[in-house]
Length: 309
Image 1 (cartoon, helix red, strand yellow):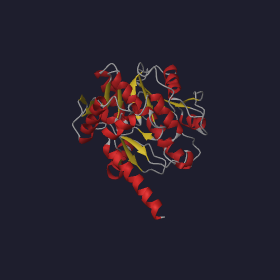
Image 2 (cartoon, one colour; image 1 turned 90 degrees about the vertical axis):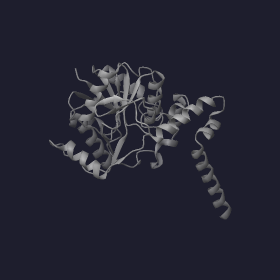
Image 3 (tube, helix red, strand yellow; image 1 turned 180 degrees about the vertical axis):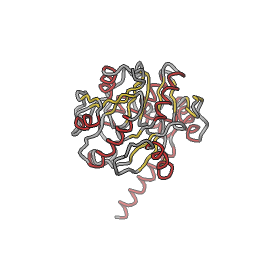
Image 4 (cartoon, one colour; image 1 turned 45 degrees about the horizontal axis):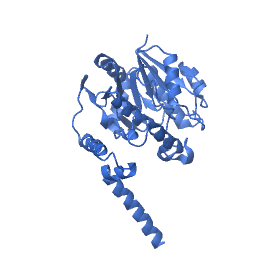
């Protein structure tokens, strides 16, 4: 029995750059000990890549009306086709190293129910990686020299016991909102939400968004709006890594260290409880005044430009 089953629903492998990035990512997972890899979905080239790399492929995933795989179905299939105590959903452009397995083992010893997550490092990669004996040390050095730590607002992996997340909405994968809800759900259930950023380096290979409509990021997509509605609104989809209850640092699970980001996030949460009686848009103006002012500035600038024209 393996410790961890990693599963993912990749993009089509038709774009040469995306093909390279996803193959790099999947191969990095395959080089982890005590880990099983499952690819879910039926995108172009997926079956061929799964066969070439020797990983399990499950094409029969439930999809929404736009043909996007549903995370609820992905989780169901991952449970059905694995017996590992831990499951891990990960984006198909993320490189993983041995530290993710070590972190998982520490969490299993620490809590019965938890979710492990962390910030990613963004890095430009354009060529197939060579997975020689020293590939992890070479990658880490490249990240230190050229990479950039991403803000704690997005999550690219979640690792959790197979008994967790057994009842989730039919979120569309690859669209905003579902990852925030994963954190909200864990907090609501009082599971340990463990930020592994200090101990675990995950690497996001930078890419554009040509695979999406208009080549634009998915934040304003109709599927994102639907994800948000299924999550219960923007309050639930505001949860980020800043809402972690614990942190993995130097091999030990402790309370997160104070940061300005965590402080202001705490203030926001308190204000949301105080002004619970206000409509959601009014609460936004109270708890996120900077965001509100920026929006007003943009509106004012647009009106000024229209007048000048």
